[in-house]
Amino acid sequence: MALFFSKSRKLIYLKPKMGFLGSHFVHHHHTLISPNLKHPLRILGFYPPHFAFRRFESTKAEIQLNHMQNIDNNSQVLNFPGGKVKFTSHLNFIPETREERVHCYRVLDDDGYPVTSNFVQIDKEVALKMYTDMITLQTMDTIFYEAQRQGRISFYVTTLGEEAINIASAAALRMDDFIFPQYREPGVLLWRGFTIQEFANQLFGNKGDYGKGRQMPIHYGSNKHNYITVASTVATQLPHAVGAAYALKMDAKDACTIVYFGDGGSSTGDFHAALNFAAVLDAPVIFFCRNNGFAISTPVSDQFRSDGVVTRGEAYGIRSIRVDGNDALAVFTAVHEARKMAINEHKPVLIEALTYRAGHHSTSDDSTKYRPANEIEWWRTERDPVTRFRKWIEKEGWWSSQAESELRTSLRKQVLEAIQVAEKTEKPPIKDVFTDVYDVPPANLQEQETFTRETIRRHPQDYPTDVPI
Image (cartoon, rainbow, N blue to C red; front, top):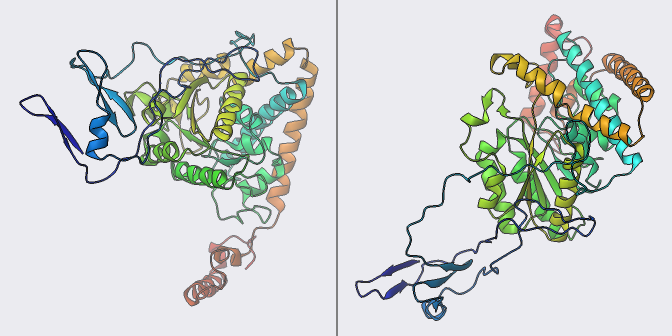
C-alpha cells in the first residue's frame, strides 16, 4: 500500500496488493489493578489497550478515504490497518533511549525489610519450602561442582546467585504449566518434586537417568513434572514454548508455558521470532529473561545498546516488567501476576530479572578472566538472594539459626549419599543408544549397532567396563 501527496496537496491512495495484520498500540505508565492485592500494582510496561484491534479488515480505497478525519485545523488521522495514526508536521524521530532506565520492581531491601506492601502475600509453609529449596540448590551446586573437579562427572553448571529466580518463579506457577528451561533452572524442577537422587542419576548417566545417559550432565527433563528436556543450543526453546502455549490456548487449558533464557539468548533470532509469534497469536506464554550481565564472557554492553531486554517487549506489543532477580518476593509476585494475565487474557508477558552469576558460567569457564574477582565476591556476599530471603523469614519468626544448621547438615548428607548411589548404579546398556527414534530400526541403524558391539569386544581396553554390551 502507498500513500503520498500530489503537488496539489491532495492525498493519493494506491490500492494495496496484499492485506496487513494489525498491531497493538499502548499507552505508557498506567497502573494495573490486581484484584488479589491490597494496593495497585504499578508495573512499568503493563498497559491497557488504547487502539482497538483492526485485524483482517478491508483496506479498499473507498473505505480508507472515508475514514480520513479532521482532528484539528492542522492535522489529520490515517485509519491504517492496526489502528489510527495521527499525522504531524513536526519532524520528530523516536529517541534511541529513554531519559532514564526502566525501573526495577523490588519488595525486599538488602537487609530483608519490605519496602512496600505491594506484593503477593505468601504463608509460612510456602516461605519455608522456598527457603529450603534454595538451600538445597546451593548444597547441590557446591557438592556436584566438587564432584566434577574430582573427575567423577564430566560437566556441571551452577546457579549460584540465581536461586531466587529458580525457586520463587517456580513457586508462583502451577503443576499444569509447562516449563521450557535453558540450563540454569534446575531449581524449578526441584520445586516440582524432582529428588536429589534423580538429579544425581542424570549427572552420572546411569540407568536411573530418564535420558538413558544420552544427554550431557545438567540437561534434565521430566515428563512427570512438565519440564521439557534441556537443550544446549541457545534460545531454541523460545519458539517451542510459544507453540506449546498456543496449543494450550486452542485446547482451552487453564495453564500457560514459561520459557527461561539469558541475556545472551535475547541476542538470537529465535528470541525475536518467538516474541512476534506470541504477540500476534496472543499465546499464553511467560518469557523469563535471566539477565545476569554476561553471555558467558560477553558483557551486555557488547551485546546491545537498548535498555536491557525489558524494552524489547513493547516493540512487539508485549507487556513487560523489570524485577530484582535477587528478591524472591519480587520474583514471586511478578510471575504470579504474569501467569494470571497470560491465562485469563491469553497474552504473552516478558519479565526481565536483573541478577548476577556469582559462579562461573560452567566448569569449562574461568570467569575471573573477564570479571574482577572482587566484583564477583561483592555480589556473592552483599547481594546474595538466599541470605536476603532468610533475613525476611527470620523477621517473620519462621526461622532460626538452629533450624539453619540442621537443614544444611541434613542436605549435605543427602547429596553425598545420592552421589555414592549414582556412582554404583549400572550404566544403561549399549542398545539404548539406538532406541527411541524409530518404531522399527532401519537396516543401517541395525548395522551400526552390530558394528559398535563388535568394536567394543575387539578393543575392550578403550571402552568403559561398566556399560553392558
